Image (cartoon, rainbow, N blue to C red; front, top):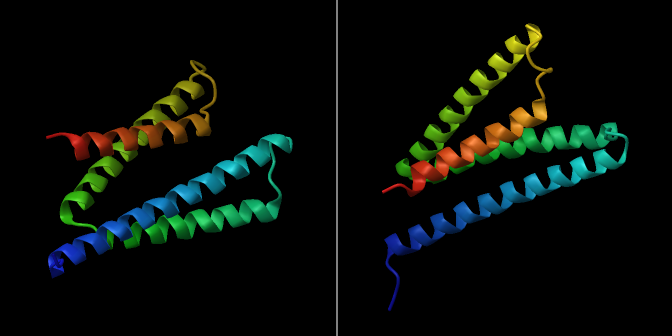
Length: 134
């Protein structure tokens, strides 16, 4: 049985989606590997490695997100917008509260790694909640 044009387009769209996801995972893996190197070097990265990571993250996330949002349907786009909005609101609230409580000597100084990881977790949970609920 021959595939119709709609089926071919859907298959191509699905392949692009998973290629982008693989690229994002690779970028995350490279960043994680750099963090492991950093832990073994007194908490510091060589300047060239730090610059390379910053450039890769900027173009990988910025360009990848732009391309991703151009190539997905309106439901996937909406799920990403909702998850991003929830994560940004979480970050704003968590950081601002932690910062002011720190300035009031109630808690220790904000830990940016904890905030970053927590924001990524919140975004992932929000995305899958939006994506998988009936």
